[in-house]
Length: 370
Image 1 (spheres, rainbow, N blue to C red):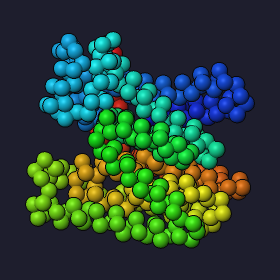
Image 2 (cartoon, rainbow, N blue to C red; image 1 turned 30 degrees about the vertical axis):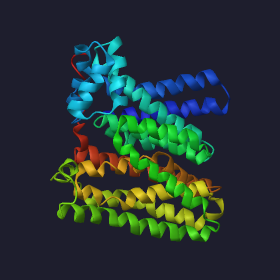
Image 3 (cartoon, rainbow, N blue to C red; image 1 turned 135 degrees about the vertical axis):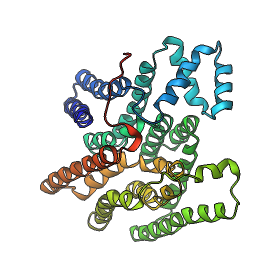
Image 4 (tube, helix red, strand yellow; image 1 turned 90 degrees about the vertical axis):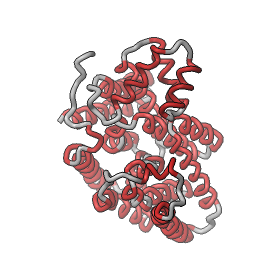
């Protein structure tokens, strides 16, 4: 299948680049990293605009650049007409100055996303396997980027910001979160990560982490119930209630099912590898728990469920971190878990994209106007 082949090819390039990185051969390290990014970016760029439910819409936004003589009028009109965020409009406009080929625009967008993803993994490479993180992105999030492009750019900046939180660089995180909001307003929810960071820094005993997890579980479990209650009482304005009226919701059973194995492994890593865990590791774990407990939002409406992506993107670094901590100093166990993990993410991709046709990106079709 073409998707799996492209994912594995790109990941192979990352693997080779990591070999040159460890051997300090900088030129080949960068070369194969570019191959890895360009493989996925080119694959997204040459697709037909029928691939992805929102692709035609993004194509129209881009082609609209030719109708304007200035960036201010372009951004003002499209912001007023469609509510598109300024960051995405500015990117449209500046690419549109140089070309009217939408496939080049898609290529630029993917390069931006993929660069952010790699930088995020690179920031914490001492604690995660970069190749495993890249595979995680390919199978779990790259398909989403072929559909909801604006939010994919946004969550790539969120992930980069979270990786800087992990490193302790909070000022950069604030800047990156603000940039993320410029591409999709849902990124405003990423600011809640600072609340979790504050809570984590107040923990003096590792045994207190369970109390934090239980508290977050209870609070977030009440959010979907609260939204439904307020909407049923007419307490949510018309502007926002329209997002709650959708029949195309996601099966809660399947979304919980595909995440449960890694949640179980995460709990096991806390229990059996506690002495290896730092406060920042718990911070990442809390974000994974946050996304898991917010899953009922998808039962309200698909659009509301997209808030999950602001937290779910952390799995790109979170899942490899879990595997790394659990299998630390256990080489045989590490191989077993790695193989099982790859099988899991391939299954998730197959179930969501091939079986359920999520995002309408399968079967893949190359554009005829390249």
